[in-house]
Image 1 (cartoon, rainbow, N blue to C red):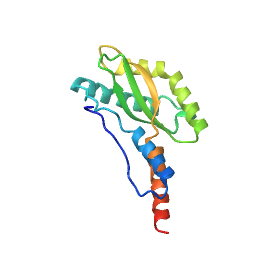
Image 2: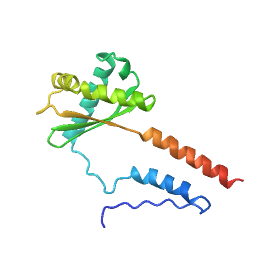
Image 3: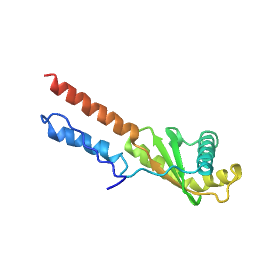
Length: 153
């Protein structure tokens, strides 16, 4: 199977459940195949979209639900039809859910701002995705600290 990345963490067998949890968390975030890099035009469009969305969110959308929202990355499709917007939201799960729904509601406004500020063939539809990378990294660190605590006893 060319292009498939297998991941398996191997530790000592003292706590297999803990190790399987760590393995699951790590493996879920490794893609099965190597993604093709977007061309230069799409990379430039991604940078422009990221800049415009960040500025618009910070300056024009003064809503308490957007206070903890950070736009981390954008990925635009090759035909400029869709853009995935990866966001990180501070707060508990209820606040994250509310902020994501508010972002979805404001997608039309953000798209119109994007159309007026960035010259593109087509203004893409925005799809928001919650990025839980930091949460998962913190969880892995906690589990590793737990493992180190168990092995030193």
